[in-house]
Amino acid sequence: MKQKFNIITSTCVPLPLENVDTDQIIPARFLKATTREESFFGDNLFRDWRYNADGTPNSNFVLNDSRYSGCILVAGKNFGSGSSREHAAWAIAGYGFRVVISSFFADIHKNNELNNFVLPVQVSEAFLQELFDSIKADPKCEVEVDLPRQTVTNKATGHSEHFDINGYKKHCLVNGLDDIDFLVANRQKTEEWESRQLTSRR
Image 1 (cartoon, rainbow, N blue to C red):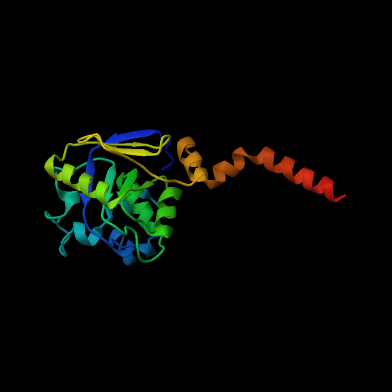
Image 2 (cartoon, rainbow, N blue to C red; image 1 turned 120 degrees about the vertical axis):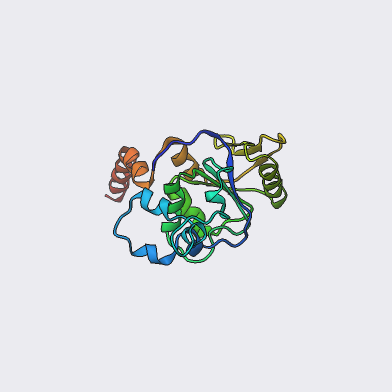
C-alpha cells in the first residue's frame, strides 16, 4: 500500500528470534497464489507459527497475544534471510506493519520491504535489546520512527539512534512514490536530458 512516511509513533509487536527467514515469514506453498491482494498475504504472515496444524490459532505466538499490537515489528538479528521472495514483504505490509526494526536485515529482503512501503530500521544490538526489554516490561510502550530525521526513539527510556537509508528510497517513502511514480514525476526532466543527448550527437 502506498503511504507517505513522516513520523510514526506506535506500540510494537516483539519477535525476539534471530535468523527469521522468508519461508517462516510466508511459507513457500503460498507463492503459487494467483492473487496479489495484501489481505491474503497478511492473513498468512508467519502462518506456520501463527496457527496449529488444525488451523486454530497458536496461543503462544505473539501475533495471537492481545497484549501486543501496533504497526511496528521489532525482530531479532538477521531478519528476512533465505530466499529472495518478495511475497515476504507483501505479507508484512498486508498485515499492517509499516516499520520493521532489527539489528541486521538480509539485503534483498530489506530492499523488498522498501519497495513495498515498509521501512526497515537497522539499529545496534544494544538498542534492539533495550527495545525488547521495554516492550516486555510494558507492552503499551511506544516507539517513534522519524524518517525525515532518520531517528528511532524508545519513548520508554528517551534513548534514540540514527538509522541509515538510501536517499532515493527515502525520497520515495516520504512522498509516497514507487519506482514507476518517480519516473512519471520526472518524465519532463528525462525527455529534456534525452533531447540534449540527441542534440550533442549531431
